[in-house]
Amino acid sequence: MRLSKIFKNTLLVLMACIVLTACATKKEVETKTTTSTTEAKTETTETEKVEPIEPIAGQMQGDVYTGTDTVGYLAEGVKDRVFFATNESILTTASRETLRAQAAWLRKNPDVTVVVEGHADERGTREYNLALGERRANAAKDYLMTYGISSDRITVLSYGKERPVDAGSTPLAWSKNRRSVTVKAN
Amino acid sequence: MIKKFVSIILILFPLKAFALIEVDITRGNLDPLPLAVSPLSIDEKSRIGFKQILSKENIGSEISLIVENNLRTSGIFNPLDKNAFLQAPDIAHLKPRFEDWNLIKAQALITGKVNYVEDKLRVEFRLWDVLAAKEMMALAFTTVPTNWRRVGHIISDKIYERLTGEKGYFDTRIIYVAEEGPKTQRIKKLAIMDQDGFNNKFLTLGNELVLTPRFNPTSQMVTYLSYFKNMPRVYLLDIETGTQEVVGDFPGMTFAPRFSPDGKKIIMSFANDGKSDIYTMDLENRLVEKITNHPSIDTSPSYSPDGKFITFNSDRSGYQQIYIMRSDGSDVKRISFGNGIYGTPVWSPRGDLIAFTKLHKGKFYIGVMRTDGSGERLLTENYYQEAPSWSPNGRVLIFYRETKTNSKGEGFSAKLWSIDLTGYNERLLKTPTDGSDPSWSSLLGN
Image: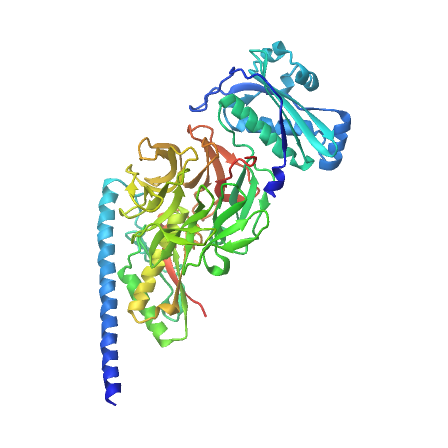
C-alpha cells in the first residue's frame, strides 16, 4: 500500500518534471531561434537584399504562404501542413494552430504513427536544403511532442528541394514549397 | 570495369624534347592555338578488320575526331578544317611537308597510324611543331579494339600535356544524376559517361531518389545519397561489381558525402534534431568520428588534397557561409565575407582554390576564392546553378543549371555545364536526359 503510494507520488513528481523540462527546453529552443532571426535580419539588411517579394493578397504574409490551395488533410478538419519563411524553421501562429489540431487528433488516435516531411524551396543549394528540410520537420515534430505526442510515433523525413508541390519559379510557388507535411505512416 | 580499361600498353619512342610551342592556360585564351589534326591513316586490311568488330567505317578518322573535339572544347586549341589539308595522312605521318601546314597557319600538327595486329588495336601518333619543323612527341598504344574511344582521349591528354605543361583531363568520366519527368515528381538515376558525353550508362533504375554522387580517388567507387526504403542515407557503390552498401549506422539522415583524398574515409553530414554535423567514417575499420559539433547546419564538407584541412558550409553566423578547419575539427575559420550567401565549397585538386556556389540578389554564381577567402572571382551568373566539381587538373569546373519555369510552371530543365577557371569557355554537356550533380573522375590511366 504504502510503497505503491510512494511510487505513485514519485511518478507524479517525475511526470511533473518531464512536463517542466519539456517546457523549459522548448523555451530555450524558441529564444535561440528568435536571436538567430534577429541576427539574420540585420545581416539581410546589411549584406543580402533578398529579391523583392510582391505581396499576394490573401496568399502570403511576409513570405509565408497563408493560402489553402495546396493544403491536404490528415483527418477531417485537420490540416496536414505548415509553411515557413525563407531560410527559416520558426513556426508561425497559424502553424502552431495547425499542429495543435494535429496533436489533438493524434492523441485521439493513439495507434497512428506519422512521418513529418520537411521541404525547402528551389532557391538554395541541394545539400543545405536537405538539412533545412530536416530542421523544419523537426520544428513541427518538437511542437507535436510538447502537445503530448511521443517521439516514437513521429518519423522525420527531409526531401530538401526534391519534391516541390508547385513547379513555378515565383515567390508564391516557393512559399508553397517551404513546408512540413504530416503524413499518416500506418 | 575500369581496371580492364587500364590494360593499355604504352610504348615511348625515344625523342629529343625541344620546348618549342608553349601555350599559356592561366589566362583566358581568346586566341586559341591553331593546329591540324590529320586523320590517322589506316591500311585497307586494318580498316576492314575494325569495320567488322566495331562497325565503324574508318576507325582512324573516328579516333582523330575524338582528339579534335577534345582539343576544341578545351578552348585553348583551334583544330583547323580538314578540307584545307594538302598532305595525305599516311605521308604526313612519315615526314610532314611543313611548308604546306605552315601555309594553312597550323602551328602544330598531329599525325598517326592505326593497325589491326593480332585482334588488337595499335595506334601511333606524332606531334609536330610546324614552325620549328621538328617532331615534339611520338607515342604508340596497343589495346583491345573496344577501347578505341579511350585511345582518342589518351592521345588528347598527351598532346595537352606536351603543349601546356599540365596534365590533361580528357581520359576521364563524369558521374551525375540523370533526371526525367515533371518537376514535382522527378525520377532520378545515377548515370556515368565519358567526359565528352559518350558511353552513357545508367547505374540505378530510378525506383528511388538518388542525389550527389562522388567518385573516390581511383574512380572505381562512388558515394552518394539514396532514398532507398524512404530513408535518406549515404551509400557506397562499387562501379565494377555493382555492389552497394549503406555507409555507417546512423539513426537518421546522412547526406553530402565525399571521399577523403586517400579514399579511406567518407566525410558527410548527419542530421539530427534539426542540427546537421559533419562526421567521417573509416571504410576499413568502420570507425565513426564526429568532426563538428554545433547547433547550426554544417554540411557540404570537402577535404584539401593533402587531407589536412576540410572546407564546409555552415549557417552558424545566421546565413550559409564557407568555413575551413583542420581535419580533426579544430581551428574553425569563416572564410567567405562577400555579399550574399555561400554554399557547396570544393577544394581544388591543386590545393590553392575553393570553388563555391553563391546566391546574391536572387542570382546564383559559380566562383572561386583562395583558401583564406581572398581573391574571390565569380565565373558565371545564372537563374539557378550550383555544385561545382573540378576537373582533375583543376582547370575546368563542371556544375548544373536549372531553368526558370513559366507562369504555368512549365519549361523546367536541368543541364550539365562546364566553364574554365578563367571564366571563359562556358559549355553545355550533352546528356541523353536532363542531368544534375555532376562529379568529375580522376585521370583513369593514372
